[in-house]
Image (tube, rainbow, N blue to C red; front, side, top):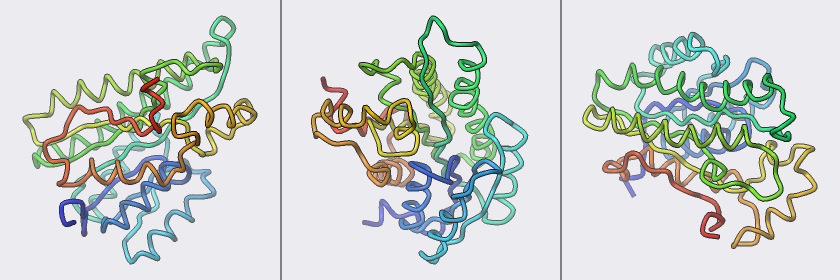
Length: 254
């Protein structure tokens, strides 16, 4: 359907080198977009993202930097507009996770998760919004987590949960500031997903439990986040802003 097409539109994706970010970057290209792919300088899998987009006949731009740096994001967005054209949509996927008991967690561990997951969204939305708002057109999708709305049983990750709750409420707040200015802002909250983040050593033994506790009795694949991202980025969602869309196999119902 044409409403869901992004033909020749320019989309900016953070965390595009792996996991959900990679799947969404490629999925947006499948919908017709040219994609600016932003990831860390050390991302070894970013070339795979670029190659997959290229095979679809779409343009891909390799951008390196860190979402904790406002300067990196501002420069990346500026380069995107110079080389691909006006930015129409963005999907902010960059994020990290780790575990630790709340009473023993070092401030440095707390701060790093907050810096990447929440302040990174702040920097990303600012850089993207500053070019979209003058044109009164744009869509921003932030990847949050179901952990921003509920507490995962058996996981000690208060810092991660707090950061994702912040992403959800920040997104709703900015959506209301920009609602009359032509820029939509929404969230996707994935459930348990088979990404490197959820296969890290401290949770690897719990993946069977994750699947068992999900009503659909399995974890998601990264590709299952693509449809939501394409929808929210496209004209099909032209009257949708300030929404937190759960893609969690029903987990948040229990």
